[in-house]
Length: 160
Image (cartoon, rainbow, N blue to C red):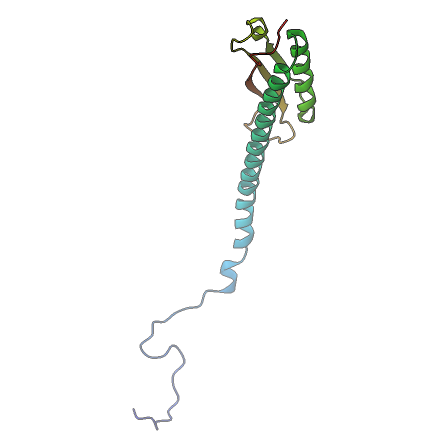
C-alpha cells in the first residue's frame, strides 16, 4: 500500500492492535458506595481506639503528676498529720477535672527518722476514670490508674 491509496478502512482497531473492549460504565456503578460502607465502620473503630488510648494516657499522666505533687507538698509539712492532710487535699484538687475521687495513701514514717538521716514521704494514688462515654464494645467502662511517688525530707530541718 502506498500513501496515495484512498480506500476506506474497515471499522475496528488499527491493524496489529489487540481487540480491546472498553468496560461499560454500568460495570463500576455502586462500587464507591460499597467501599465507603465497608471502610466507614473500620475508620470509626480506629478513631475510637485512638481516642481511648489518648484519654487513658492523659489520665495516667494526671494521676502520676498528682502523686508527685502530693509527695512534694507533704515533704514540706512540719508534722506527719499535716503532711497526710495536705497530700490528700492536693491530690483531690489536681484530679477533680478527671471526675474521680482518688484514694490516697501517705506514708509519713520518714518523719520519725532522726535529723541528718535520709528520710522520705511516699504517696500512693489510685483513681478510677469513667470511660462509658466512649461506648466501644470490648473496652472497659472504667479503668483504675495507680501511681506512687517519693519525695525526700530535708535532712537538717527539725522534725517533731
